Length: 194
Image 1: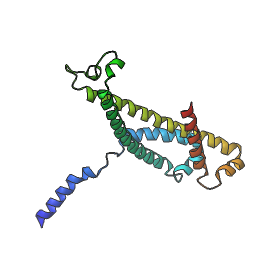
Image 2: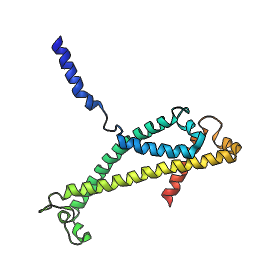
Image 3: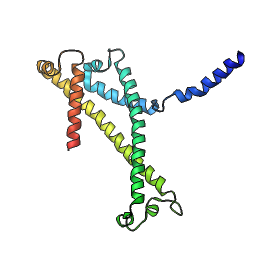
């Protein structure tokens, strides 16, 4: 019986790290989330609590949920960036006209960094994946700024004309959140169209 308990404990200890998701937030996720939540709180004023919970725990909920969401998105974006980069590099490597489009350099000469260019495919994938991930991170930051700007607009709209605000978004506790969500979507669409 004792051997069974020891074996079970060892197996459990070995599996515990595997149970932790790769999308678990890291310290930088929480730092970035805290900056965002601080800006959102300043932009929302007293309406901030209606976005994330009661006055006591709204800031903590904002930081926690934002960090978790960002970590999950980052993991998905990194996987997608790598997969798309691999497809692009394979197509470039197989393209007969590659040299003509790249100053007469072959795929291996263009991307390779070692003597015979054997690392060209890996260098191509890593370069393109990093660029795609950076673009996705920039878009995430822009979306967060859209939400902060939307919160400012909604706070002003609610203050300037409470009746019109109530007609557009309702009078329930989630009215401010509805306003922020709709306005942020509009700001994103305008930013994309520009």
